[in-house]
Length: 198
Image (tube, rainbow, N blue to C red; front, side, top):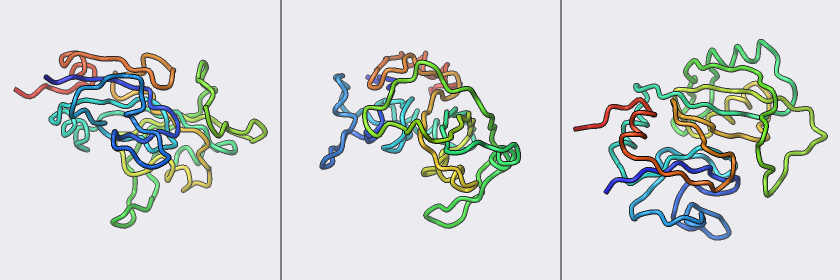
């Protein structure tokens, strides 16, 4: 039976169930997931927020297809204030380095936002309060390896905190790290704007 979960992945947790020495992983969440459950797309260890878990392999393929252009919304805290021309550079595409060479990111949406309310403090390595920082909202339609961090580094802004808060109309139900919510197949496909295969 196919099952679907949305998790607030905590900071310093791997997006996998396979354990590694001295690392937290999804198996450490206080929830009994069914066999063959995996993350659909990943967040790196230092990122937080929305992660979809399922044993539905077809959904994974549909969700990750670049041509489907599923919108992913990230809240990003960067060091230093962001200039308007830097926002435009992010929106127009930044050259980043991938394993196979240089890559120019797809056009995206970028804007400065107020510091998000009700976010939990990180359990480890809290962001220093003496730094000059800015919060951005980035809306991407692709998810390359460490893409948001590399895009911000490309305009000389270090990412201090990074959260994924939505994919299409699927939003975090809670800003509580480790929170898990289960959805039905019809619900998850509708919210993600995906036509379920016959």
